[in-house]
Image (cartoon, each protein chain N blue to C red):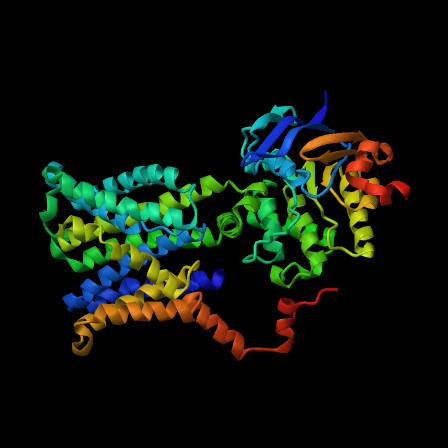
Length: 322
Length: 244
């Protein structure tokens, strides 16, 4: 535990100093902003996954956050930071309602219900153009007057919330609750674990973080519309990054975001891949899921085990008992 | 009335088939009860109703004087109702100690993770898993898995412990060891409600025996009484036991 916390402090220190090196390059600063935002999305999705629930609503909460800020700006001249705070509250309320209804569903049924939620929001956004601007969407002036260093620290604050949630669930009694629920809900319940409450709390907290990420993104890119806000690919990214990096960990979602986001960006702008970059990107994810169970983190620990393999180290695993 | 647990007219149907059909019984504090009966008699369904994993179609359950029929499983556990499963299902992603800690933290109300760890270590020692506390559960043998199942249930600090065939798969020597352990648990003030096929265990550990067949109670009394009951002999014990 201590070693992991020290490593995170080092990571945070480096990330805090990063603008010193990148501030002169607006493209790299843009990437750094978006990277932190996706890390928050990936970390919070992973916390829901730890209870055994595969959520496809993360992108929808992101869009909800974007629209809350946009509508607040359009109708109440709400400044971005105030909009962000309101979005957090809206996200929590919607998540309690959605979680209360869907968290009794398991596996594929929960996944489909959460996927449908995004489609409902998109349809609503299209059907009430007077409020949402319809297909055209809503624009607002750039966050912090376009200062990408300032917005980087705001994204960093949201990232820190997500990291605190992820580490908090790992190193407190919550770890035992979510792991037990993921393995066997019935057994967890008869051992006293409040199954529904645990699932609702993790889902709501994670959804608030996703909403905040969207509430950051909207004024950062200055525009939102139904197709961009409720893009399914964002829900997919929220789960692909942790799965690629290493599910049920804190380091996995962060590494997964860095590697996959960088790869996606590289393919998108590099000539031979440019046209079909999404095909290559998809293939990488498919191969990773097939050949790297537990992602990069799992790969690293298997390699470490192989390097330090001693015969006695295997005994407890094969253990023939008494 | 000082009954710890009372079941009144429990009915549970699965697609029209009544697995439990009008089951009533009570367990007095300190008076251990064994439920026996042929396979399919509804014993495990009765346990699922009592522990709150299933809701009855009819009937009522009171525990410690409170109607718990609508109380959820985890709350019943916190009230002091612990159970083990016939098919042991350890949490594969936690080690032995972590499995026991789940019970201590949530059912047993441990104030901190450190406190739960200390309690879990004590229980691992008690059931004979002390040296294996940090093992992954995948490496445990059948008797060790039964020990873990017992330690996990004890960690929830039960007043009433439901044991679903804890002796299954044990050798006679291991059985004797387990019976000794359960005697110690009883001596600590835990009342036992057990489903058991091993007759010597039933005789050793229970004050009273309830016999079920086709979801209904068909006899109740001491071990000696029920083993002479002609209904029981016909339904369950068979000629082999009757002549023994």
